[in-house]
Amino acid sequence: SGGGGGGVGIESQIIDNTYTFGRVHYGLTPEDCDTMYRMYGSTVEGIRQMILLAATSDDDNDATDDTLLMSVDEKVKEMMDRYYTEVYDNIDLSPLTTTTSSSSNDDAKVDTGYSSETVGSIERR
Image 1 (cartoon, rainbow, N blue to C red):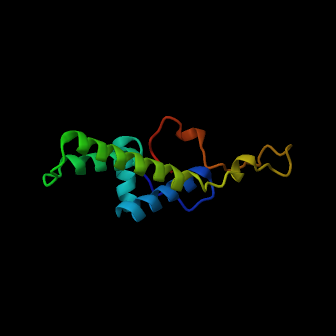
Image 2: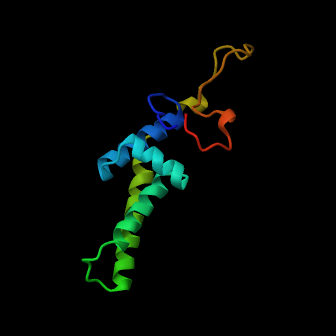
Image 3: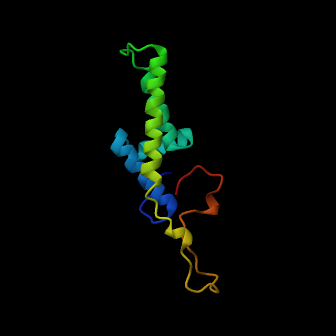
């Protein structure tokens, strides 16, 4: 469960970058990110839900409903834009194009960070 990271595979990079995003912008721990991932299917959806919950529980806001919703929509859009830029823009895609030195060697494998063994599972490596 969670824990990913530390590797050069694409999935590991995404997990590491997600942990960094959560920590820097929302004070989240890797465990918080993993919990959101399990609850909502993705950490970014968990953060979106966190923003929506904070907005609906803000009793001190004097804004009209339309203004409040627009403000929340803007916050969510800004977070989503920042998330996808910060998490995905610097991904090293070289594991996708790496080839083995001997194509006749069936034992040689390239680690892209993706495992077909985990397809259909929401459990992170």
